[in-house]
Amino acid sequence: MSISARLLRSLNRTAAIVHEDVVYASNEEALVASLKILETRESFHDPLFSGWRDRLEAQLSGLVDRLSLSSVAPDLFEEVEAIRAALAGAPDGKAEREAMQRATMRDWSLLVERLASDPRIEAAERTRIVFETSDAELTRIGELCGDLLPAETMQDTAVTAPRLQAYLADRFDDAGLRVTDFRPLPGGYGKETILFMVEGQALSGAFVMRRDRDEPTMDNDCHRVRYEFPVIRAAYDHGFPAPEALWVDEDHKLLPGGDFLIMTRAPGTSGGNVHGAAGKVDHALVDLLAGSVARLHQLPPMRELGDLTDGIASHLWDLPLAEVTRRYIQSIKDLYLREMAMPSPAVLALYGWLMDNIPDAPGRPVLLHGDIGFHNFIVDDGRLSAVVDWEFSHIGDPADDVGYVRNTVGNSLDWKAFMDAYRAAGGPDLDEARVRFFQIWGHVRNLTASQLTTNCFETGKLDELKLGHVGHSMMAGFLRPIRDMMAG
Image (tube, rainbow, N blue to C red; front, side, top):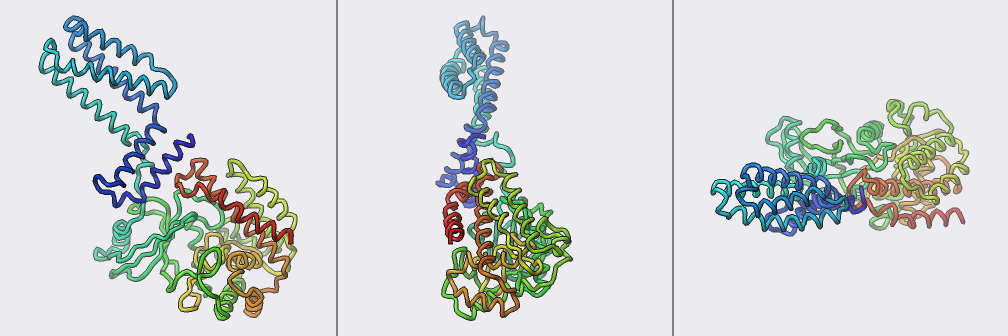
């Protein structure tokens, strides 16, 4: 598929964001309709052209045979035959075919006016010509306006409040259940997140939906909810402040699209974003964050998860830390090479450096969150209510999480105080070089993820326009701190 075709398809998917509010003659209606026409012309030119040509040829042939046109109106017969000859000699090039179609449509329009009014042709036949020509035009315009677009492009899989309400009412057999608040969150490069509230007999309260894409931008770790769900449940059951995961649904006919999990909504709001805290981080919150990370790293091996993913498997709990780290980094590199249409030399050079510098650290492998930062902390009145978004969770070196914390929130707090609190809460002693290695790895992993995301768009695997930039525009933001740490 050409760049233009993918762009138009992506714009059509983007237009679906506003389609629920589209009304007649609105700007949104015009946008959606125009994009469908542009996509059809770009991506389905061949069937659009051949369908028009075959229908016109069939109509002209029928007129000649049915009306005995050569004897009834020889002059009109000659013009019909000239148009049929033009149709038979259609050129191969798109621009040439479009030019031929425009010229032929003009000739046919002028001719059919005469056919529909010529007294040499019976009145009933003249009316039939009008009807046949109208039917052919309705078919042509229908195809141009979207009838040729595949069902998957036209399928509307957006989660809306009414659709969610219908799904929940059916699941809990509660006809009176109502969705009273519904708020999709921005972002959604990995998964779609929706906050909603419900009032009903069988279900009531505040909840969160985490929904897969139709295709994940990274198909490893817990990037599918069927893998994320048991990890969240296991952490919660062990007393860690993970959300309460209620159910995961892989069979949801009333909500077509990606699979999803439903969790209770923890009280509070996000503590910040990937760049740091939303406000000042006082000593109590530093202690709370450090203590929570240490607490996660002290959880016993969760063998009940079994062989869930490549990064969460029974045998990994018993391997040396360096070997678990090596296998995990190798798995991400293999994924990158397998999926990327055009790998980055800088990224592969970094993987070479990483594999040559894995710390030979003491201790046992632990469950890692994999994306620790204020963007995934829910803070309520100065307290950590929940750690959310476990899609990068895997088994590995505790320094992996700590290095990632330093990347995401290190500038927002007193790092020495954080590390002191982490050790005081039972976290292992981590030297500076070990933490720095995993800081570099955290940036490389996120750079890999951003490039794989854009690769999904550029190869046509996913059509969301917002995915097209991250692998390019975010590269400098990852490479610069990596180089600074390696040079220092």
